[in-house]
Image (cartoon, rainbow, N blue to C red):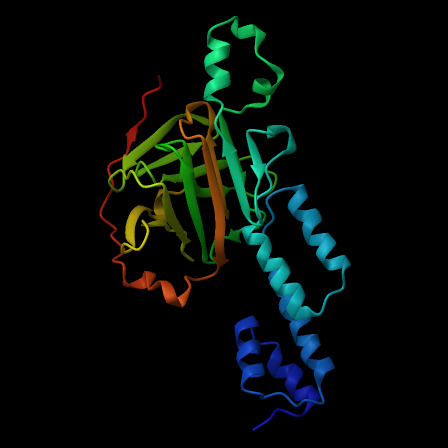
Length: 310
């Protein structure tokens, strides 16, 4: 049975999300003579999406505005907006140490040779390139999710050399846009360690989530549930998924209201020649092919300790 009445379609359509609209299109439930009404429904979905998705910074906001200026059809516009959840944009002044790679990816280059040369001479005489080398380069994805909304993203990391703790995949937990509050929850997938940092506390907490690996590539999946739990899954090559870390929502600060995926490079501790991180997925749930829900969600308390500074 096809829905042929425009008014009826509009009234029903306001209750449909993007997945519902796609299913209706696939089932050919809409009258082919009502493309304008269908476009109105897609635009309503876009409006609802924009009303709930937070942007990381001014560059992310500009990217949204540029997409809106293109006046794309609603379905295409929504796809492009959702793709911003995979976009990584490192600052230009980190080049050549941190730079954009292929679409949705970022590369970090080792500075060990330059650091050794600097150590052999006066530290105050650092070459200009080293002055742009950050100790911790943190790059958030352009868009995220507000508390109460689920978010899942996947990252594939390849390392030319030993990575250890020098690359982390994580979640930036923030307050509202004017709070200045920030908490980083991270997994170092090669070392198997989890970390928690807060911008107004000098200490870092850490725990061993899973054993260390010596492989040169690994895939990490990060899940933020609707209640605010943060879960890390790790997959090495074709081996089964394993839970690598879990932080329950009740461990989050009271101001936590926005969540963004993030990549962290600890550049001055980086032994690998080059590390490449690609964001392979972003959505509200795991891809159905992943079977992530078959992995037991262990809520056993992880023992966190204060990381001693060197």
